[in-house]
Amino acid sequence: MTYNLDQALEILERTPNTLNIMLLGLSDEWIYNNEGDNTWSAFDVVGHLIHGEKTDWIVRIQIILSDSSNKVFESFDRFAQFGNSKDKTLQQLLKEFSELRTENLKKLKDFKITESQLKMKAAHPELGEVRLKELLACWVAHDLAHIVQIARVMAKQYKDEVGPWKAFIPILNT
Amino acid sequence: MTYNLDQALEILERTPNTLNIMLLGLSDEWIYNNEGDNTWSAFDVVGHLIHGEKTDWIVRIQIILSDSSNKVFESFDRFAQFGNSKDKTLQQLLKEFSELRTENLKKLKDFKITESQLKMKAAHPELGEVRLKELLACWVAHDLAHIVQIARVMAKQYKDEVGPWKAFIPILNT
Image (cartoon, rainbow over all chains, first blue to last red; front, side):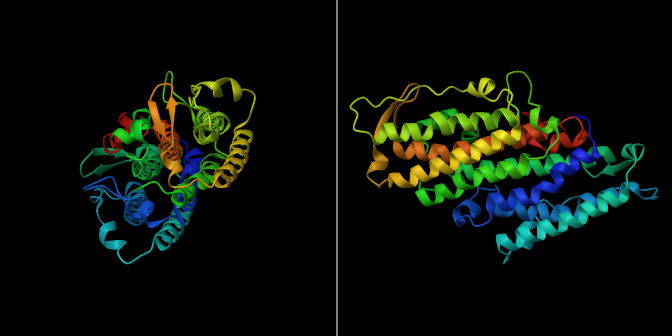
């Protein structure tokens, strides 16, 4: 698929509700268990998505679209959620994510990004030169990748319970 | 986590709605594109889940719980959906899946499976001896594994569009 704002919005608009349906009201073990040392739980992932809404996507789009002669992104803090989500419930995080996403998609639409703007560039601190189209496509792929992660983390909680079926479910063997 | 019917139901009950939210109303490319030769689209996966509701979980639970002296599962047809889903819309498939799941969870609850029944066994045509608990846990892990698959297939549609970010999203490199 070629990046297309309308098709991208179809995914970006759905993610908060997808996570609400997947996670609200689950037992704590489904929400707080992870895949082992230095891995994330579903709760951690939602916190990470919130941090992205606050410091990544819209902020970086604004940098690319700006008139600055020095368009450089700040590094994204992949561990911010471990502090920020403290003392919050999953329900609070999901509500916060949903509200931020709604605001951000309004901003995205208000940019009225043109085809030629999609080619505009900035410097990523680790990846080097990146284009607006790539950032926008990444927002979508990033949402989906974290839905993958959440479902995988949850599936893995039963990796021993499924017995011999483990051989048939590749994600349980990662 | 140790298998527990109530916690398993939390996931099994959610899957139809999770898929509805993720997929209903999406553009055809999100629904029908796959990961390449001999891989499945989101549409194919929903058809596969329907076939599981019809021929796998409840049927196999009934075999294990039966008084038969020869408890052997039939092979599951992993390709049935390619015929069965023909001429159906995604909306029809999602409705069918949702209805079958509701019926099947009613049946599951009506079995009133006891702790000791969880240890009952049958023979799987490829895996050999399996226990009821393992089958029940597999139902849950299987749902989650296919949510993983659907989100991954969709993410991969943008694997070229994300440019250098591909390096940061491991599922795009599988």
